[in-house]
Amino acid sequence: ADAGLEAVFEATLAADERVEPRDWMPDGYRATLIRQIAQHAHSEIIGMQPEANWITRAPSLRRKAILMAKVQDEAGHGLYLYSAAETLGASRDELLDKLHSGRQRYSSIFNYPTLTWADVGAIGWLVDGAAIINQVPLCRCSYGPYARAMVRICKEESFHQRQGFESLLALSQGTPEQHAMAQDAVDRWWWPSLMMFGPPDADSTHSAQSMAWKIKRHSNDELRQRFVDICVPQAEALGLTLPDPELRWNDERGHYDYGAIDWDEFQQVLRGNGPCNEQRLTRRRRAHDNGAWVREAASAYAAKHGPEER
Ligand code: FAQ
Image 1: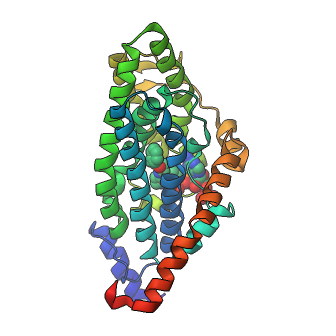
Image 2: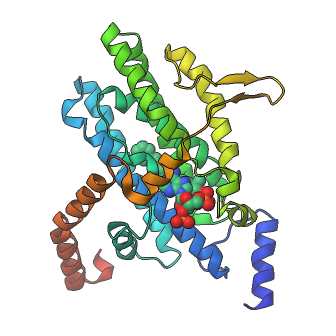
Image 3: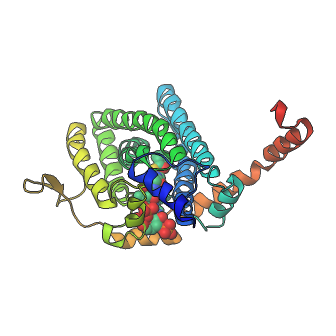
């Protein structure tokens, strides 16, 4: 690359300014961002499925309205993120094709089933909670369009986390059966939520370079620790226990110690062998195929009227 352009790029990073779509950037920087933003976008739209599973069975009109709004927000997040990826030269068609053919990933967390209504609360509290911890630093990501999309997404995720907590609290303080249902959901979602932050730092292939490029601001383990520290008092407030006998405050470290994560399970899920991988992708492909007529109609309309009328 032209040494002058590279120096401008490095100076932008050093000054903590944003890299914008028309700026020169190294090929690896572009490729890393496309990979991460695409994976993030795919997670948002695949992540609609586990909770949508409960829309028709929400226990009240109020809960149903909240859940529908949340699931629609996730679709919106997917759209902001696909748009951010488009500014790097990756078209939405191409990215969806890579998702559907298994060439790009989505978050491991969405390969677990939602077995009871309490899972909706547990996802809001833990999964959206983990998403916020991971995404707040991404608001300061060096790539402008991604950073700006994150600001809005984080505000919405905060609402999602609060609704999950409130829903779980209602169950926890309800009948003994409802309390047990809430506890069971937390027991099943806790460990997969910790895996959302990615492999341990020693096995994280992309972290060092992504941190040098200021795409990531903290390591996977740092963010995971932050999440654990925040969740322990929240679990107490909920009257629920986290399923980890080794969880205890470490005065020296100023953090909670926690037990060993089952990384074999994580690798299995990444290889496509989680409980719901096949169902999630099958439904996604079907939804895409069912929407073909909308895309065709939109292109036909655009061809007829030209861009100025759109
Ligand atoms: N699942 O070198 P690293 C949400 C892969 S929140 C699957 O550490 P990196 C909100 C990784 O791609 C969820 N794969 O990777 C919501 C790489 O494989 P590759 C989405 C994972 O990128 C709530 C390999 O392991 N959030 O959707 C996972 O530096 C409710 C090595 O890992 C984001 O995507 C995983 N958990 O760090 C929606 C946030 N972890 O590509 C609906 C943005 C790692 O070489 C309902 N992303 N891998 O084949 C990030 O911050 C980063 O990409 C990390 C991973 C931290 C996830």
